[in-house]
Length: 77
Image (cartoon, rainbow, N blue to C red; front, top):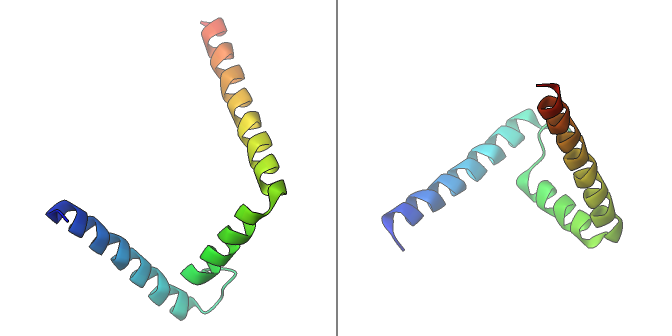
């Protein structure tokens, strides 16, 4: 492992540790959830086929809006 990879790994671990400390002090999982809660929720979403449909439609909507605004700017000038 290179020195850069070690620094990156330490940085990620440090962010997780700080996150958990803050989550303990806030003590409100709705405001500042624990990393484990986020992981469990993410896994639950990834197992749900409806999530992928919703993600695709939302991404398509955002991309369409971006393209329309780009065309408006390009056409307006």
